[in-house]
Amino acid sequence: MKKIIGRQKEISELQRCYNSNRAEFVVISGRRRIGKTYLINTLYDSQFSFSYVGGHKLSQKLQLKKFAKAISEYSKIEIPKEFDDWFDAFDSLQEYLKSIPTVEGKRKLIFIDEMPWIDNKKSNFVSALEYFWNSWGALQDDIMFIASGSATSWLNDKLNDNQGGLHARITKQIVLPPFNLRETEEYLEYIGVNWDRYQIVQTYMALGGVPFYLSLINPELSFAQNIDALFFERNAALRLEFDELYYALFSSAEKYVNVVKALAEKRKGLTRQELISATGMQGSTLTRILSNLEKSDFIVCYQQYKHTTRDTIYKLSDLYTLFYFKFVENNNTKDTAWWQNNLQSQTIKSWQGFSFELVGLLHLKQIKKALGIAGISTSASGWRTKEAQIDLVIERADRHINLCEMKFGIEQYEITKEYADKLRERMSLFREGTKCKLAIHNTFITTYGVRIGKHSSIVDSQITMNDLFE
Image (cartoon, rainbow, N blue to C red; front, side, top):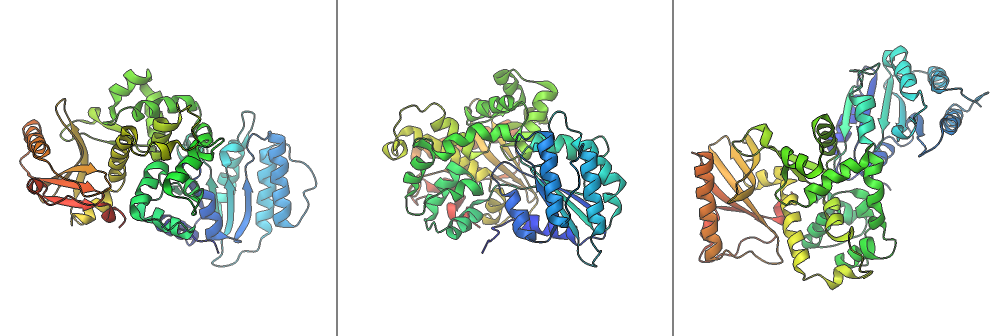
């Protein structure tokens, strides 16, 4: 039996729309492989009055033919002629939906998946959709229309930010995010992968919380063996995935790849001005790219503590993309067991440190809960100068501030005298540079905690990887 892992917020929003007393036009977006179609099909199963999946790279003639066939299958009435255009197609859909008896408490549910694939250059699909919705659909209290697709830029431009006939007509926008660590653990258990949390964290650092990527894991292999199978064997599934990923999501995809590649090379992240220098892009083009990347959960942006928005830091947060650039893009060794043969390399250890920092940034809610400040108003930011850097600064309404340090390792982290001195110097630089008057706490986020020792008192609070699974 199919099971939906997580997605409780999204399910609640969809059910609220289903139970409302007005026409609903819902747009559900999210990166490729994130589980949009699975969620809708599993949640509503056989309740659709009509559903259609856009065909990838099909001509308009073929799209219309397939659309007519779908109407015939649902209505049990053969469509007598081919549609001339999408206005004909939506007229036919409207007539079919009118023929369905109205039942109190039951929606006429329409689901068009991969909608961006339908709209080729010579298509009048969007104009016809606008007319269908404005002239009839929006006036029907029992209609719920769900549009979905992976091409984020198309969905934003044509639907969510539409300035034409669909302007302000979308009643709900849902962006499906990747799984968090707890959901990843639950999903792996569901598919029979019974690993400890140390292996699950590493899996998350390589694949992110993308359900399809996680579904490729072979429960009979170790984590390291799975990484080789997925990335380094001949025609490995996730080695080939990258070429499709950005091109499926964005128009002018090479520009998006240039931006994420620039961010992948800088552990500390980049400001907008630094991105302009690194990519040569600026103005509205860069603004649009950054906005779409953030909406699709490829990057995170946060303001530097006590700085203006001009100094906002952008960081690559898509862990799969980071892994690909770090280990796969330029790896021509032909070693099909490359990961197993390089487990102790400094390159992998460096990646583990960087990726674990990102895992922490993606689990701020869990960090706040572990600190006992879930109910306190906070703001999260970063801070950096030429002398020092802090990846996560949590300023709290109770006039305390947490300077968070994240460390990945196979055992408890030991604070040496040299490192304790470095932390004290960093606190001093932070207090002086920001004119901070709040109580400062050093917070360590590690896999197995901080080892109690002569210099561990510099750590005021600590969080382990188990806390990130809450």
